[in-house]
Length: 237
Image 1 (cartoon, rainbow, N blue to C red):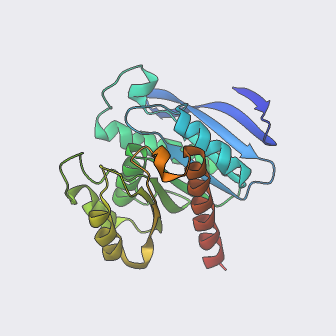
Image 2 (cartoon, rainbow, N blue to C red; image 1 turned 90 degrees about the vertical axis):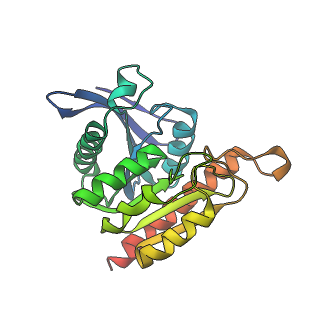
């Protein structure tokens, strides 16, 4: 385990997360601002690990907004493989990461979610059995369907998730078209919120002609995540 202080007045530590005897351990990175108000357990997308530029940029901005994070590696990425691990292993990893996050939170309200696949696996785990201590889920680009193959089947399990959910979706997201995401959110009722990011694709990139930058989009995502966390704390009274 290593420890350092970042320029954002935060403590950063690398930890090992034990999934199970068959899978072994994966890497986790804890970023805890000194005045943290929440902790978010954050899984990465299918094609990039916990140190991907999007994850780094998002965590930096969440830290500035007093949101601590525990981002973690899925086993296949830890092993240097491209093909994702079997679903059973991915879900076991989510549960192990949440358990580690609950310990790291030390009394902070706990959230969970992730980028694309990381968010979907978190929701699948939560739909099977409530994740201990988790008050809400945040999806940074929910992958509702494959590119060019619109459908809602991948979202059916969300009806079994018992905690509030926040969907952060770009208007150019080819893996989560808004005309499918929006009715899904409505069907989930008050448990689900949707924040639409104008001009962003699935990776939350925006075109130059939009007049916005990717950095501005990251700020918007972090603001929305922070505001969602605030509503959960307020709801608790």
